[in-house]
Structures are given as structure tokens and as C-alpha cells.
Length: 206
Image (tube, rainbow, N blue to C red; front, side, top):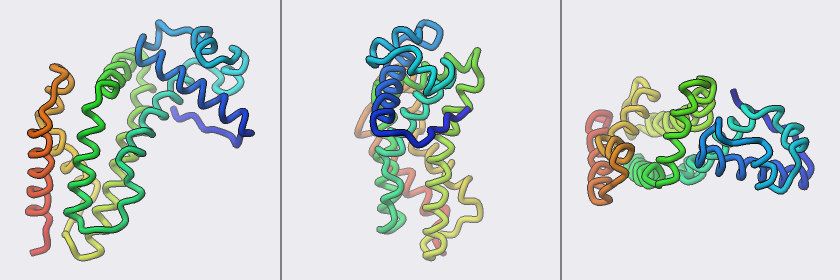
């Protein structure tokens, strides 16, 4: 349920960004049903008509807010900048940055809100997966494919290998993050280092 953005004038782009930011704050704090377009318009300093002209309806606005938050994860990890360095160094960097990002309280709250809204709006869950996890999954798979081309590792299914690496980095700590709202930085670092070691032992060139 992605929301495409036509090319806008600078003033329109600024308004759209302000609307999405206000919407994200409201939706992830109060939930989809509890938030009104009027409240978002007031917070963004625009009219209801402006919101509808940009997004059409409330569902599209929620989807845009989801995509914007997922974009922050992609920016935080900075996958597009990982073009150099050994596969070990890149995996350590990816694991550390990813783990630090998903531990943020705002992200925990964000995921809970998306999960709650998906109960009655399944397309919201699809929007979340398409905007964030699936894109990151694909980018990591391309990094793994590049390492294969460089002769650093041997992988027959890069998408599966990417999934395995991310899962190892999250580990049991993901459940603690979701249900106890606590993390142990030392354990997170050990989990990332362990994920890298297991990954390279499994896929390293023999």
C-alpha cells in the first residue's frame, strides 16, 4: 500500500514532510483509530484540505508515516555507503547499527503500533514490510552477493543468508526488547560478533 510522491514544489515538499512527521508522532503515540485528520492538520500547521490533496485519505497518510519511519532505519544503517571494506567489517558494522536502531524505545513503540493496526488493517502490515524490512533484506542480500563475486564467501541463496544473519543479530534479545523493554549492550555486542563468526564459518571460502 505504498504512497507514491509526485514531484512537488519546495513549499509543497516542506508541507508534505511536516504532515508526515505530525502524523507519525500522532499515530505511533495514540494509534490509528484514535487520531483525527483535524488533529494532524493542527499539529502540522496546515488545513485538512491540504492533507487530503497530498494523501487522499487517512489510510494513505498512515502508510506514508510508516514508510517515513522505515526510511529512518535505512538511513541509520547507511547500507548504500557500504561499498568498501571486507565482508567481516561490513557485517560487524551492519549488525551493530541495526541492533542499536531497533533497541530505541521509539522503534519498539512504532512496531507495537504497526502490529496493533495490522489486526484490522492488514495492508498496513504489508506497507511496513515493503517499506522497511523487505528493502533492507534486499540491500543486505546484494552486499552478500558482492562479497561472493569478490571471492570472500560462497553463498547459493543470498536472500536466505541475509535473513539468517539478521535473525542471529536479533536473537533472544529481540524478545527482551519487545516484552521487557530492556537490553544489555554487552550481550548485544556479543550477539553481533557471534553472528558474524557463525556466518563466516558457514559461508567462508574453504
